[in-house]
Length: 111
Length: 114
Image (cartoon, rainbow over all chains, first blue to last red; front, side, top):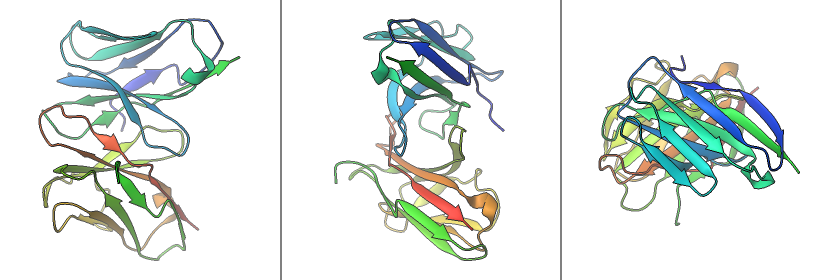
């Protein structure tokens, strides 16, 4: 059972457009992470957010943690073909315990 | 090596056979995790080691699955009497074991049970 639901499941947009991916849960997490996964590879960490309401920026990517620490969003500005991949959110409830992963969003940027 | 290494990268086995999947974590990482990722899904937690001991094995689906880490470094995930439903990518990750330390993932082992 996936406790973290991501939407949309699939997204295909033109290069240069903006997009937002959502990660929602009914559970509270002590921290939330976003990963990107390429085919045949393991997930690679993009960012960790720990404080309710926190916003972090990584170049064209903006990550936000909900005030209640139950949800998060990833916004990409001016998407590029290199942004193509599977985006996963993952929540943790302890300091260094197992991660609960979301259902994933498969993003395709069309040149 | 510099990263988490998993072997083999691909494994095809017949239903009912026994398989072992190996994970070499980053040197010095005390925490080691196993996850399973089915096609089109996010990874699902299987088991977490802190040192040699399994700190949390609540994700193992049944008693056909077992994992060891005898010296606190390399870990082996063992699956007995494999079933077609066990087919998935098995991912290993390791971290320093300190609070909120980053977990680094291997490339995974793709297991196919025919």
